[in-house]
Image 1: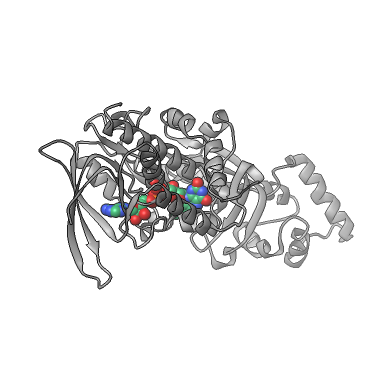
Image 2 (image 1 turned 45 degrees about the vertical axis):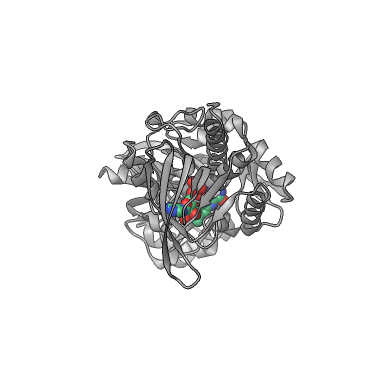
Length: 423
Ligand SMILES: Cc1cc2nc3c(=O)[nH]c(=O)nc-3n(C[C@H](O)[C@H](O)[C@H](O)COP(=O)(O)OP(=O)(O)OC[C@H]3O[C@@H](n4cnc5c(N)ncnc54)[C@H](O)[C@@H]3O)c2cc1C
């Protein structure tokens, strides 16, 4: 199969679909290649199947959640902001709701509805969506523009080799996180083939694995706790929120927020420790007094706290399922040190869960080689990048998807301008 289109978009994730829509809305003919049978496989599992579409924070606050350089995102964020994202979905029939933490979800709480909306809008603007099409190579065509070679898997599972020429290409193949959804790092190889540098990649927003850990912890969820990250014994980050102990380790939105710096440190061979504060809203002295008062209420006299009594006392301070793991991992626990231990439960970390289950990839195509006002490669005119393939990542809370739409929209608009010699 051969042909010509103005813009080829590689990857049918949120960045690629947004790029395709924006290029098509700007009078370019667009073909999108997606290797999976359907677009948006990762998008469909976001937010535990509910999809945290975006976050309504002002740029000033939003930018604090973008790494490593939020400045790079500024132009594209203003080109297609969180408000624009909400308007986009609402305009195309997807009602949204605002929840705690300024997070926005589809009203249906179904990520599939977000995928369907993108697919319907691509259809509306005549984007030629080719699924089951895996891009292999992009080369510069002798007559200008680019040639994309890809294989299409037919319904009878036959592989057909195909080629398409275009004036412009947008690479939106995602990173390395959750490779089962299709993001296997192909974009890095493509970028390198045009001379781009790939900064060091590592999993971010991932579970941290404590040295001493048991199945007693699994599935325990803690609300409004404090967590501090110590790297090489220095406090580097402290935050409050919700944490989950899973089979993988310590995660949940709070755990994820600290994981980026923790993973980086572990990769460098530095010691990492998490310190959990089960009562962050009260100071140590107040908590000591509370412990004292609770003990007095039990009327146990001075002959304090054996194991059974300690467990009874702990019910006043933590969910019952946490009591056994707390007692097991805090040696010499007694009524005098209980308040300290509640505010300072130490978890030396031995490792992190890799890309297999990470939410996002940190690192990627070097931002210094990309024009932030267009997403165009500084090394190869007509080549654009969008989404997680770039060296840009966000915290949990809708920041990553917004980054995908903002950079995707910028890449799509710019690719169309390039096609019409207006860039
Ligand atoms: C479990 C999970 C939950 C998440 N929840 C949220 C959330 O609620 N909110 C939020 O903001 N972020 C969330 N994220 C992060 C967010 O999903 C990603 O940052 C975002 O999807 C990145 O978009 P992208 O388009 O750049 O890449 P992707 O979504 O990874 O899409 C890339 C696409 O390119 C295709 N592709 C790759 N190589 C080729 C090739 N050679 N040929 C053709 N196609 C190719 C892939 O199949 C894939 O469809 C979550 C991530 C995970 C893993």
